Image (cartoon, rainbow, N blue to C red; front, side, top):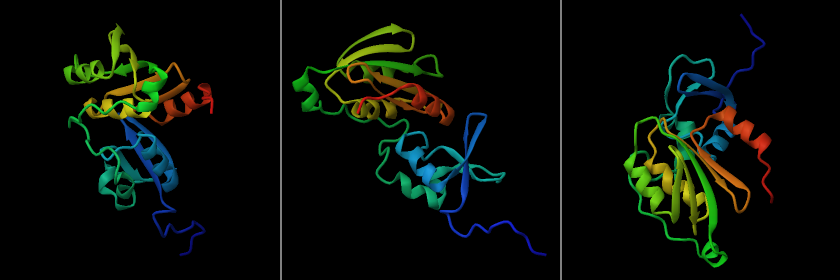
Length: 186
C-alpha cells in the first residue's frame, strides 16, 4: 500500500506540540521551538510531544530539543542565583522604571519577594504588582527573577522608561497577542 503523505525523516521536519497546564499548543516546527526557548516560553521542564503523539515528556528529554537549552536557565527552577551586578550603562543613565506583574499560584513566595526587593527601589502597588526603579536592564531583571518562580508561576515586565517588555511562562497565544499590541521602538 502506498501513501501520498510525506515521510518525516529528520527532527528538522518533525513538528511538536507544547502542553501548558491543560492547554495544548502547536504544532510547531523545530525552528519555532528554538524561538520559544529563546523567548523563555519553552523550558527544559515544559511538556512536549511529537505532533500527533499521545505521550508527553519534558523537553530536555527530547534530543532534538535538548541542545537548545545548553547555556540557558543555568540556575533552573527552585535554585537561587545571586543578585546580578548593576549594568553600568543604566547606572550612568539614572536607572530604569519597571512594572512587574506576577501570577503566583501559591499563597506567597518570600524568596521571590526578597529577590524583587534587591533589584533597586521598589514598592508593591497590588498583591502581585510591583513598581521598580533599577539600574538593571530588562533582560537582567527577568533573568534575576525567573529562578525564584515556580513552574506554574508567570511574570510580565514592562520597561516604562524604554517602552519594552519581557515575560516568562505566559503561553504561546498570550505571546502572540502581546506582540500584536505592544510596539517596541527600535
